[in-house]
Image 1 (cartoon, rainbow, N blue to C red):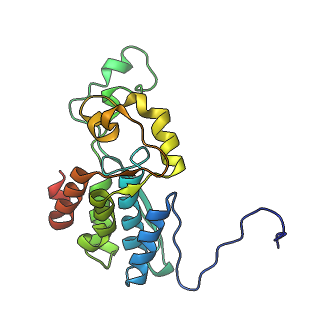
Image 2 (cartoon, rainbow, N blue to C red):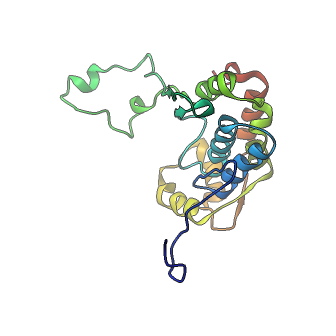
Length: 205
């Protein structure tokens, strides 16, 4: 047992379920889904959908998804939701030049996003709630706004110089980096999430 007089973290315990993410708003979304009768898949997707809004520097619907799920504590199910390489990619451009890897900042390093297809597959095969209910917290955060946390502000400042063109209007309005406590919104992302909630993967792809 740890010394409770010293600064440290206690072990988290719960009677029925728990959730942990890198952002309190995403964790809350997962817990609320569980309280409403959802299962672990519902909660996980609700959380990551929120993270795609409130932590745009880390994750989002334009990314991939990898999941390990153990239905009713049974045999684990693995899902590789990584995206395909775009059909127009010319591998010889790099292989012929003797390059070992595709540079991470090049357009060729961007794959077709696999996250939405993976989320829809997980919900269809293992979820208990509709996408509309699962996405509700993320849609609310995108449309009504979310509070910038210290880590998000730090990352935004670190990578802000990479934001150019149309993306700057959303992520650097007025050329200003967000500060801790600022309220930001992503209404267009909210609209996209609404469409996916209603029409599934076909609304995205």
